[in-house]
Length: 206
Image 1 (cartoon, rainbow, N blue to C red):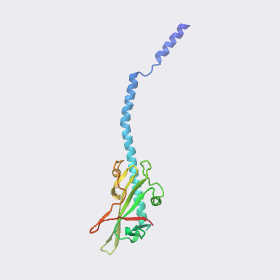
Image 2: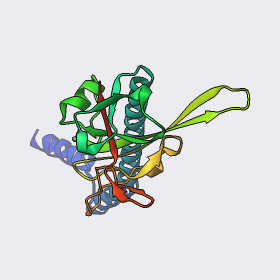
Image 3: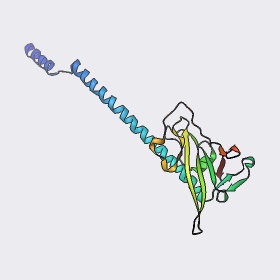
Image 4: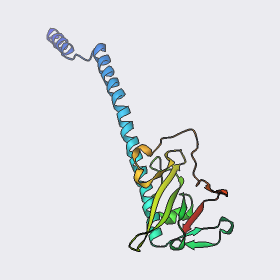
């Protein structure tokens, strides 16, 4: 009886073969190679997705300001020495005007009823939208007003559109990743011939 039990136990031990050390090392090596290839690719996909989202948010800001301009819901400061003297946007002369963006500021929150923050960790954002007004008199006697929009906007992690970019040129490639230098978030001073640098004309919601 004992002999039969021993034979059976030997058969079980022979059949229960596990992985060898070489096989385990081979599997680990293959997994390591796959991770080396996959992680950069996944990271790139995530970054591109965030860049695309940043571009879409920037376009939303521009469209919202454009709609406010068309609806006459914006007033501008024509003379910086009299900041309380605001002119409705339809009455301002041709020129360059700015609308400041700061997601911590109530004016920006009023402008963008929902969202508006950076896709990079939902960080706060600062910058400005520049819009240029130009009136043209056509030969037919018709007067046409044209406006062009540009934007500069970055988040607190220095991701974003760090150089002033026109609406038509907004693209994924224009969104910079984190940099050590702090990009500007305020409109630059304008240079007037014979006068020199002057304070840019700021606009606010009416």
